[in-house]
Image (cartoon, rainbow, N blue to C red; front, side, top):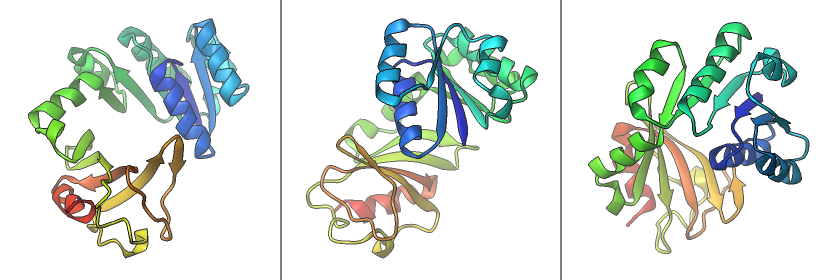
Amino acid sequence: MYVIIVGGGTVGYHLTKDLVARGHEVTVIEQDEARCKRLTEEFGEVVLRGECDVALLREAGAERADVLIAVTDQDEVNLVACLLARRLLKVPRVIAHIVDPRNRPTFEGLGIDLTVSSTDIICNLIEQGAITTEIIPLLALGKGDLEIVELVLPHDSPALPLLLKDLPLPGDSVLVSIIRGDQIVFPRGSTTFRPNDTILALTSTKGVEQLKQVFYR
């Protein structure tokens, strides 16, 4: 998959790191010289420096991109990047980070496929009492029936002695990745678990409680 990321800050950096580790082709568009240097030093020639406009998107190869993800700290930049990619360059899927959640209706009204607001996520954590629970909801998908959740395994997790294929996972839950220190592990049937592993899982809302029973005593 070919992904264009607009914005090389913290979010853009970690997206690039994850996608490159998964074997995807990535190009990052970023204006700041220091950020460009950092990305180039770590990931090679993946950066185009400059303002995100049609010319730079064409140079990045937007016509063949599978997805564009705009994650700068300015909503107007993210919106323009997504609109240029979708309407002029026909990128099939565009995703935008929203700084001010009040702008979400504008993005969605203009046809942006998926919008993610850090403010909304934090508010949801507070409302769901997730600050004091083991499973942290990160993102609701679709009509809210699916969630991406984060779990950190304690030393006494019942999952530690088991292979992934032997876990009694809910039928509507999938483990997406395991973050182990500075490594990303992509789960397979023979995958085992370690204390302090951070697991990202896709699950139905109803499956969250069942996941908790699998990984916590």
